[in-house]
Every structure is written in C-alpha cells, then in structure tokens.
Length: 97
Image 1 (spheres, rainbow, N blue to C red):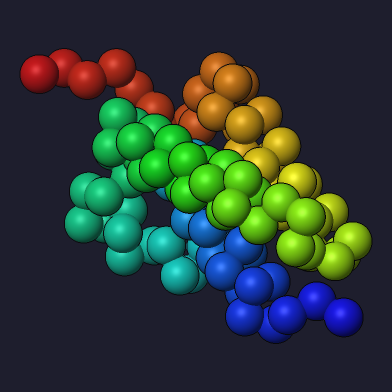
Image 2 (image 1 turned 135 degrees about the vertical axis):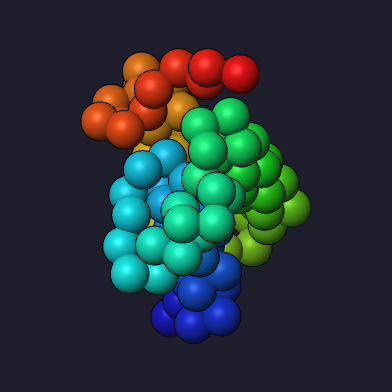
C-alpha cells in the first residue's frame, strides 16, 4: 500500500511543475497574478521540481512499492515531456525588456 505522504509529495512536486508550465487553476492564479509564472522563472521552477523528483527517485530506488515507483516514474516522465515541448501558452510572448 502506497504511503499517503509520499504520494502527496510526488503529486505536489508534479503539480508545481505543471502549474509553472501553464496548467493554471485556482491554486496557481495568484502566482500568475504576482508574476511568479513569467516564462523564464516558470521554467526554472519546473526544472527545480524535476530535479527534486529525480533525486527522490534515486534516493528511494529499491525501497518503493510498485504503485509508488510507478507514480514517481510517471511524474518524472510527464514533467520531462512538458519541459521538452515548445511553449504552447497563448500568453507566452517574447520578453520585450
């Protein structure tokens, strides 16, 4: 049985990365309003979350049950795929500064 705290941690890191990459919802609307999701900064946030997920996978290798390992592998793959894709955000305009 997966540890609920572990599942919550993985889901939180993945959600942070996805929100930074444009999956806005009510929880991330204030971050967008405060300028925390500016493209360069958002990418840095997503990359940091990916690094944390990858480190978590390395440090827990061999100690997770199948469900936990599958969740973590899926989160890493999803964030990597999003980071590799070209920006599709409609309001992602080149920085004029």
